[in-house]
Length: 78
Image (tube, rainbow, N blue to C red; front, side, top):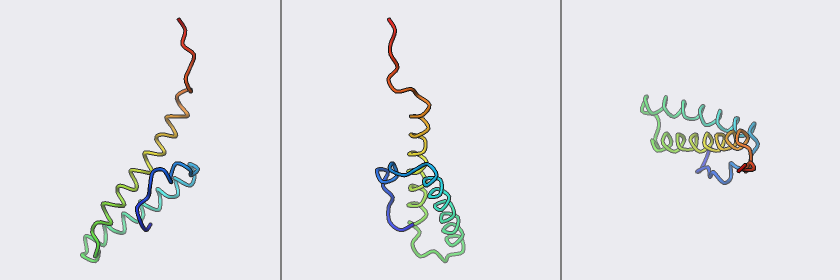
């Protein structure tokens, strides 16, 4: 993945698309870590940026799960 992923851009995606994005980011992170450990990674900031992108995707997925679990504004009884 090139560039920084914005959370507002992720919110428009379907959960299946978010899951594919998450899987791709995790694979990229593994490759970056392997290259970093063998001194083949020129830009070591890729590891940090990828970790943060993974966190953004997980945040959007958690928001979706929370919205579906909590009913929208239940009527209060007195």
